[in-house]
Image 1 (cartoon, rainbow, N blue to C red):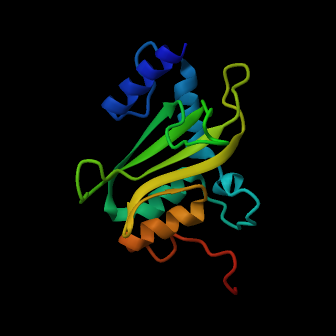
Image 2: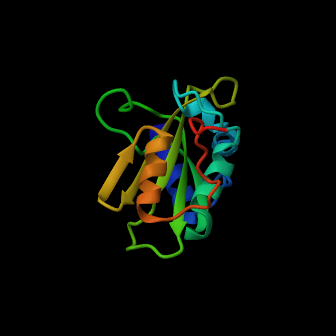
Amino acid sequence: MRARWLGVFASAVLCGTAAPAHGASPLIGRLIAAAKATPVRAIDYDDERCDERTVQQWLAELTGAEARRIAWTAGPCRIVGPGIDAGATWCAQATVVLARPHGPKDRPMVEVFFEDPKAGRPGRAYAFRGAMRAADGLDMSRFRRDFEYDWTSRFKPAADAIVDCDAPA
């Protein structure tokens, strides 16, 4: 089963498509759709965020003109390490293809983690991870705010791309 997932995942990454690879489980497409539609506040942990945007809206607004495109894939979680994230299986990834990358490996990525699927549907989205080359080197983040900080260390987003819930109204 894992070998099948890796083959499907590799196909999606190489093709850079958001659609499931030919013959792939429909769950791949459902994971991508669920990640795009996930409200960012759902993966901000205990942060009381006032942001009503979806992950897709937030990422598009944050990356703006700096992104040539955003390629969505799904499969095994990729931004993992020892500890709580080590065994994560169900994720959707959004890879930012930069308009002016520093090199071929300069591909920021955010990932939405999901609970196990039930009846062919993705489980609840429960975590956010990000990875990108920030101004001071490669950084991995567990929180959306940290990814936004890394992004703004290199790029100037649109004025309303980052919602500050703590700012006075």
